[in-house]
Image (cartoon, rainbow, N blue to C red; front, side):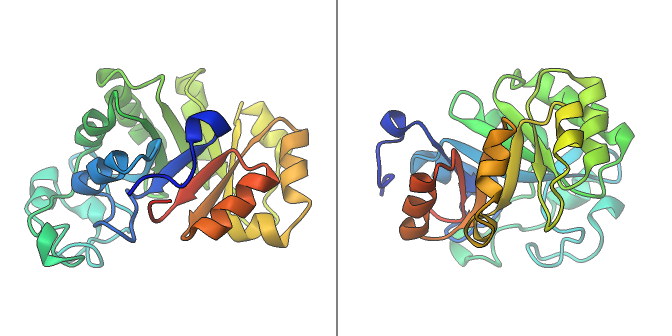
Length: 240
């Protein structure tokens, strides 16, 4: 199953949200590989820190929903996290999938697509150096965009690196364009519903030179509508 349209001709990107989370166990290496095989231009994933300060890939603040374990992510060492099963709850077919480190995810995506790294709220200022180190180590600085709901995280990251693209995940009423410009944040991410329900959002972003990214897409009809509206990047939960 490939994309419904020739992306190279149309000049837009389809990003697999958590590795197409409706099709595969989210935030696992299997999901990332399969999403890229299906034609995704890149992968969006979530990063937190283990207790021993290793950047790992998981969305929730606890491991309960997506693994067979229990407890806060940040209270577990990398070794303890790696002992969990991150695939069986999705399907027995994916039994044995591990919670990946950011390093493993970067190597999986390298030379195959782009990566959008969402900093979860548990990530501290000092943690950013560890994350940046992994990006450098895997030579992915030209293929990564760092995104967050938190302005301070993005501003602190910008102090550490002046060139890696940054994206702000927008909340209702959270359109501080000037602050985005000051931190050289170039990507504006919002649920696709926001672009439909707030008609002025897209022209506002484009007027200010921001690249719009619509997230949470689950069907081709919505994708086509957003592309026709002028959205540049589609974050999708399934292959389009």
